[in-house]
Amino acid sequence: MSSEDYRSRIEGFEEIQKEIEVLRKYRIDYTTYKGRVVQLINLLHPKVLRLRVSEIRVETRTAKTLRLVSADHYLPPFQAGQYINLFVEVDGVRTSRPYSLSSPPNQTGYYDITVRRVTDGFVSNYLLDEVKVGDVFESTSPAGNFFHNPLLHGPDLVFLAGGSGITPFMSQIRETTDRGLDRRIQLIYGSMSDEDIIFRDELADRADRHGNLSVHHVISDPPPGYQGLTGFLTADLIESTVGDLNGKTFFLCGPEAMYSFCLAELTKLSLPRRRVRTEVFGPPKDVTAQPGWPEEVSGESTFKVRVGGRTVSARAAEPLMNALERAGVVLPSSCRSGECSLCRTKLFSGRVFHPAGVKLRKSDRRFGYIHPCLAYPLSDLEIMI
Image (tube, rainbow, N blue to C red):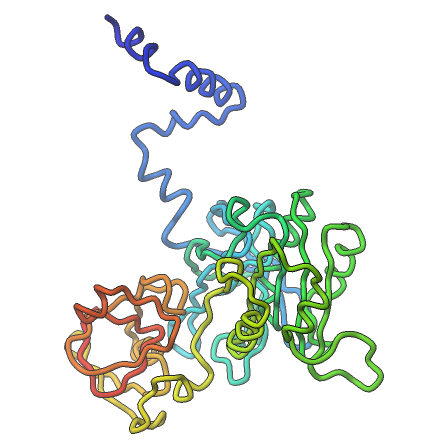
């Protein structure tokens, strides 16, 4: 019996043959990549991207959008809500920061990242004040789990955004409205003032043109006579704005303080936890105020870190990764939020503090591994990268 005869007796073989014919007809026959698996993987998930700034757009008094095109003529695909980790060199220090992509995935010619100024921000101030069109950066491939899965999350979505937390939602809103997807989105967007609303005009325009999108702005510090929603995103405000909560999936992204506040408010609404999705967040503003921080350790304490035959100085209230980068020790990283595990490092001696939310494996705790992006030294340390 020939191999052709044998294969024809396998259940589903004829359907596969028909599918191959369709792929060939539309010139998407991936059999041409046979024997080139590594090449295909690197095409879809390259370790490093080279991105060139093609345009800089002012969004508000504190935010700009950087449009990034490929310096190598190719951008890998992503899902709306994912981020890239952008590498920069500021004052001789090579570091990185994750930025959600605000452009939609159906636009394949560029990535948009929208940067908002952070008080005393090391990287945000550099990107807003120093970067110019033509500058080239390196970044990771798109990553992250803060995206819509139609099988798990359904078509009825509520986006709770605060400040620059609008960026992953903007990618989803643009994709939904551009492609006419069967999703119903209610956006509740908290800002300090009316002038701080990023994408205000575009959001209004898309809401006017698409009946499946509604936009509600909440101003925490309104001017006299302001007629819109004010205050914070409380349970009462959310319920009165959204209406029936049944079957809706809530997505939450914003400043650190917003997470703890809004999660507590959503708990009052008796929402199933599976119906609440949160984006990863960076270092807390004051780690010493986090539950579990040892009272005997001052945030200003300085400790010695031995790594690779050298000694680095590290402050208690600062992520260990920051201190290592200042000393020229650069770790692999993507999220800088304790989630991706790329910076996973062996701790030989000493103690560190991980805030709640850092996704340490059980094996990490057992065998002494830490995530330096959100590990804070509580004593002198010895680590191996």
